[in-house]
Image 1 (cartoon, rainbow, N blue to C red):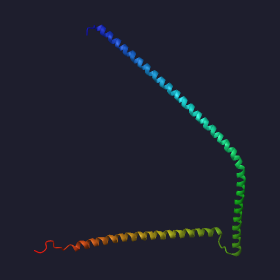
Image 2 (image 1 turned 60 degrees about the vertical axis):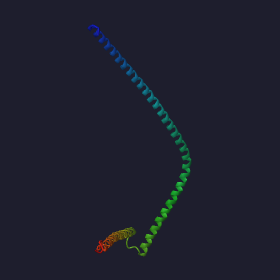
Image 3 (image 1 turned 90 degrees about the horizontal axis):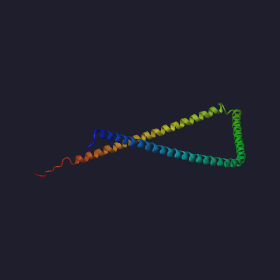
Image 4 (image 1 turned 180 degrees about the horizontal axis):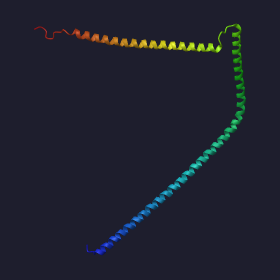
Length: 184
């Protein structure tokens, strides 16, 4: 209270300067902390990347080793498998040729003996269509039976309901003419 106007102004300037200095120091501290955080984060990311690279390299080496082991095992097995596969293929081809030969002989016999008036493929197609028709007829019959059973169940349910109602009406009517007051 006892200060002059100049002293008050100088005190205000000093206070503002202190505040400016403190604000600048805070900014500097916060920038330094951010820089430290970024540096720590960068160091962590570099460490993480290095670990991932090491793991990837290790996986690649293990996969390469496994591939080499498989190739060595496969090459041994391939020779045995190749012989077995070839012999299996030969057996299958023989069976196919024998089957084709039998079919051709049957066709020739049918033609020679006059059994066949139509080609074999046409007969097979007609047989397949007949089977399809029979299957469709069977499905239709089953559908009709299911429908009849459903209708029968519904009718039985209605009949039971109507009988229950009739019984209830009869019971209620039997008590209809009761004299509650007795003799007077």
